Length: 276
Image (cartoon, rainbow, N blue to C red; front, top):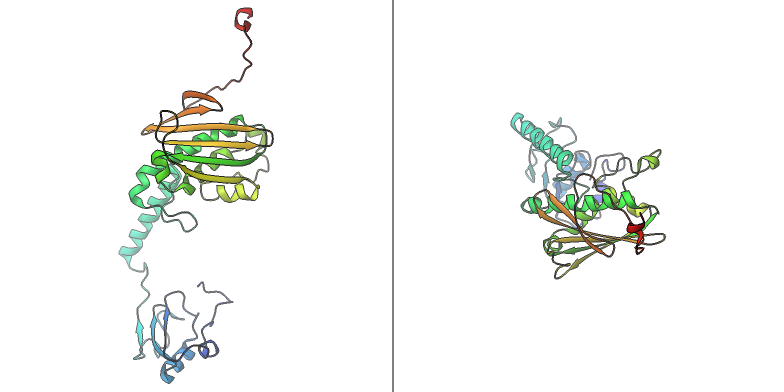
């Protein structure tokens, strides 16, 4: 519970009167949420049997009646108040920022799916594969995106799907230079990409598939549905930092997803090469 005007003294004599006799109360949120004078009175009367308090209205307390009460277990709300803790917290924050900026890995983010550190090395290559598949679509699209169906095969299907999908949408929603003026996706990232897609009315479907796709085991396959058609892409991770495009629409391909690629669609007209 945050400390704000609406939550100040939210636990008071009136609210405590609605509790059962002998209730136990713990406050590890913010000082000021509990009216300390009313709590002392409730402890004295037995309405509150015991209380555990880590935060106080004033720190250190200006009045010690609550902290010293025989029915109260109090702790000093150290948090990261020691010099050693502050150095450690600062180091961890900087390490996490570096991971996010360099690798798009959000460690301990409060507004993103929590990923077990043990699978971070496994899932990160699929983040990059998904982002690159999305970028391929963003470069060749010519119509508004309506729906994305993402299928996961092999090792990719054993991992959390949503964070991989968020990286794919970072690439897919990237705007072209001619579209960037006033774009609402200038600050697009892995944390907000799915929310932005939802706001744009884009439907995203995720599914795990058994077996393999063609001869490849660990694959992400995507169908991008636009206003007038569909673009199909599939890619795989061969090894560290080696990402391949293996399907484009109805064609099997083997293209490096790094650097620059040229994709040309043409009509298969017999004799045209000889004529040229």
